[in-house]
Image 1 (tube, rainbow over the protein chains, first blue to last red):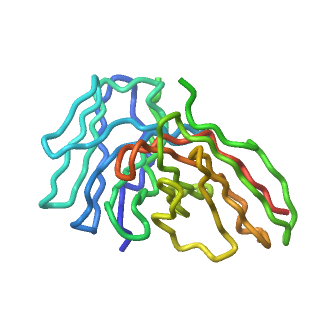
Image 2: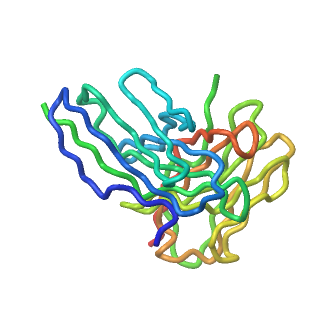
Image 3: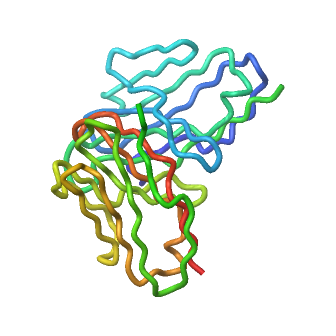
Length: 111
Length: 112
């Protein structure tokens, strides 16, 4: 089992739709959590950090459930410009490999 | 403010050669990490440096090495290149070890 697993995708949704991505992690000692966005052939860009209390940034909402070791990202009112790969990232906080990335979930928003 | 910069942007090498990739972190950031990303996969952690010391090493062979300089810039060296080393090599910087990481544009390495 991979340490960070994401929905395989791809997700093809119409403009204006609401889409949710899920991510599970296996290391219960993980310290911090992030969602990154990566456009084709570009570097990952930090979308948002994920806090236990949940956090929202405009159309984006992230949730963390430590008991279930589960992270989610909700995108409301999808825009064409939201088309990208979304990477779930877990920071173990210790050990040889501190930051572990999921494989990513590809989103295509269609007009 | 300048973001993370990497050089070169593209590189073509042949098997057996060595390569040096360079990274300059965001001003004030003390930690630099290196990642390898092959097509269709998420970035794989190679090294993390903080205050010029190695603080983490991923599951990569000894052909991969890195260092961080007093100005916090960093180099990644890969010796005896293999075809499988072809990938996008990403550098990321963070203020401290456990903060959010910000990525540079990457170096795309092709090994022929």
